[in-house]
Image (cartoon, rainbow, N blue to C red):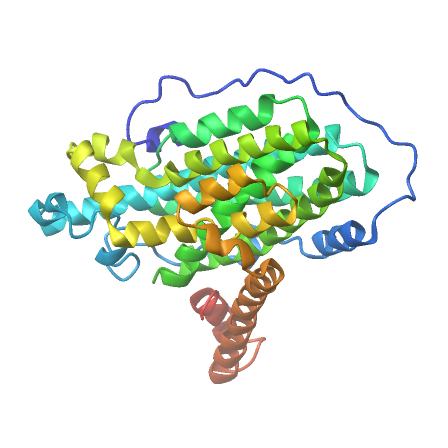
Length: 376
C-alpha cells in the first residue's frame, strides 16, 4: 500500500476540500473559438504520451548516489548541521530530501488534476473547456508517473507541505473560475516548472531527468493556456477586481517562496529544524534557488496585467523583479525542445544498439531495447 511508504504515519489518508459555489457552465456556441487557444488544444491532443512506453522504468535509482544529487544541491550543504553528519547520515538526508521533493511534485500534480477538471466545469468558453480537457489527461499521467517513481524507486514518501496545502485550498474554494487559473496555471505550475527544470538540468539520475523533462513539456503548455485565457479576461476587470487578484498573487508568491524549506524532513530526521531553516534563509545558493523559482511566474503575472505597484513592490522585496522581462515564449520552446531531443537520443541509441547486435528481428534487438531504452 502507498501509505506504507510514508516517512511517518498519516493521521488522515484523504483530504476533503469544501466545494465552492461556482456554477457549472454550458455553452451552446461550439464554433466560436479563439485561434490561439484552439492551436494550443491541437498541440495538447497531439502531445499525449504513455508513461509506461516513453519512460524507461528499468533504470535503477540509488537515493544515496552523490551523482544523482550532488552534496552541493542539498539545501543544508555547508551548514553546521551538515558538517556534523557522517557520510551515512548525509546519504539518508539526500534520500529523504529527494523523496520529500518528489512527493510535493506528486501532490501538486493531483491538485492540478482536480483544478483542471474544475476548469472544464466552470469556465464559460468552449475553447477553454477543450484545452482543459487535454490537461486533465496530462495531470492524471503526471500523478501516475510521480507515484510510480516514489513507490518503486525511492520507496519513501512525504505528506503534502503546509504551504502548498494552504494555496491549493484557497484556489479550489474560490467560486470564481479565473482564480483556479490564477492559482494553479500561473502560480503553482509556474513555480513547479522552475523546480522541475532544476531536477532536469542538474541531476545525474537518468530516470528522474527524463520524468521531469517530459512532465515539463506538458506543463509549459498549461502555463501558456492560463496566460492566454487570463490575459483576455483581465482586460475586462474593474480596478477593485484587479486589486483583489493582485492581493492573491502576493500572498501566493510568499507561500510558494517558502514552500521548499522541507521542515518535515528536518523534524522527521531529528535534525535541529530552526538551525536548518536559519541557514537556508541566509544561504546564497538557496537565495539563488528561490529566485529561480519565479523565472516563469513574474513575467506571466506582468503579461496578464496584474502589475500594480503592490505586486511590483512584493516582487522587488523578494529580489525577483528583474525577471519581469524574461521571454516566456522562448522558455516554453526550450522546454519542449529538450524533451524532444531526449526522445531523439533515445531512438538513436536503440538503433545503434540494434545495428551492432544484428538487426531489429534478432534476440539481440530485444536485449538492446531493454538495456538501452532511455539512454541519453
